[in-house]
Figure 1 (spheres, one colour):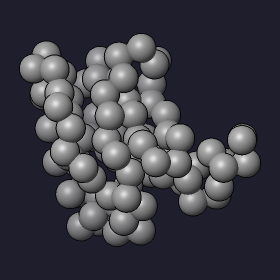
Figure 2 (cartoon, rainbow, N blue to C red):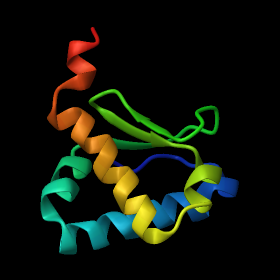
Figure 3 (cartoon, one colour):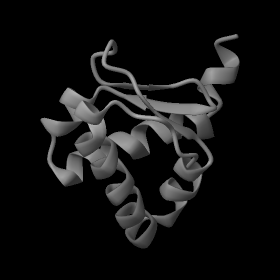
Figure 4 (tube, rainbow, N blue to C red):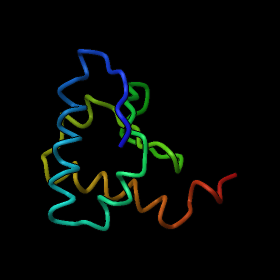
Length: 91
């Protein structure tokens, strides 16, 4: 994960994602390894989260509405899009 400049109002959600990535690494290393290769971005314009194969972006309000377990599932879901090559097949 590369560090990015973040809006102070989104700092809590960004920090939470990073904390949960470490927890994911300890419990489900496969998904975390995939996630650590992506640039973490905040995108308040999307409704949930997205990936384009190089970035993992999320809506901070959506992330804050989820439990820790759900956020880890969200991360795993997004990185599996990359693992299955979905962003590359979309052109």
